[in-house]
Amino acid sequence: MAIYKPFKAFRPKPELAEKVASKPYDVLNSQEARLEAEGNELSFLHIGKPEIDLPEDTNLYDEIVYLKAKENLDKLVNNKVLIEDEKPCYYLYAQTMDGRIQFGFVGLASVDDYWKDVIKKHEKTRKDKEEDRANHVRYTNSHSGPIFLTFHDNTDLQNIIDKYSSMTPNTDITTNDNIRHQVWLIDDDKEIEQVQIAFNSMSNLYVADGHHRSAAAAIVGRERREANPNHTGNEEYNFFLAVAFPASHLKILDYNRVIKDLNGLNRDEFILKLSSNFKIVETCCRFKPEQKGQFGMYLEGKWYALKANQELLNNSDPIESLDVSILQKYVLSEILGIHDPRTDKRIDFVGGIRGLTELEKRVDSGEMKVAFALYPTSINELIKIADAGQIMPPKSTWFEPKLRDGLFVHFF
Image (cartoon, rainbow, N blue to C red; front, side, top):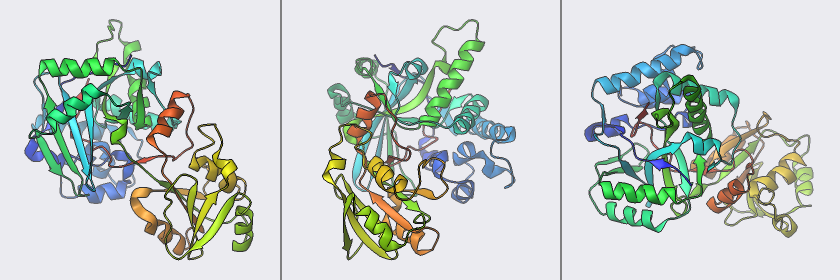
């Protein structure tokens, strides 16, 4: 059964929360982070992207970067910008984007559950990214970027959501990307117990987003355990910061592809090859897929609607039946020669939050030759693949809105 426990979070004073809260470290490059944090010394980007306070030619993986993160985090604590709560609590965290709201429970997940696969994963991780986040945890002695978890809907937890969402939140801010973030403390002992019992009844939790951060937290937790001769299992390093959302609350956006060339083919040759597995119709305007098996294609200033042949959609394998897998196998690999999208420099990925105009921009500029718009992977597909112990193709899911860093910090 899953372990998910309350904790005493360090949180920004409500009146400072809007200044502190920042986008996650991995959605901005260093230059974008510098611009975003400019003039705001309280921005948590100074902790998540501490290189912004160092010379621009600084190696992002140099020890000085992680030491700067610790210095900046300590400053927020010492200056009473971040205040520790008086007792272990759960926190209800709501995000509202484009009129849609999702509620998650902030708590601590178990390192043991990670290693035992009670917390199920669906992506491979890269060792260099694991080590970067592990160093951030090692030097700051904290988890400051929450892991995005999901779980099968639970009636008892929904009742808690319904109760608290009708109350005045402790924190209520709208960030510069027009996303509203609200936080309620769940500090009643009886309700804390109810939440804990509900999570303890679950067979599994699922990583929706944050595979490198969860891997880093688990690695550091294991290191601390091995280095502590008096280890009991109750130390804070055995747990990591997370926000767990009911599956029905979540929405996955499309994760689209742009390709540099047609692998030596001209347009007509490429379309002819496509037609063996797809029905192709030129459209009068942008085409955004509306159902599974549909793809939009932008090539030489024109949009096309692609529909995969039925036999491609009838595959019972949960991986092979994904739209990203169909595109990868029958177009990117078979026709364009892109066999490993993780390493091939001819492909790039565009999150659906950027819209179809970004695909047009990348192609019209001459940087890319062709773009593909995909129908989003579903949360049920994600859970099914994780339950099967399988790994999704790279860049299969794009979750929005992103969790904000700095609203909750777990020290150990």
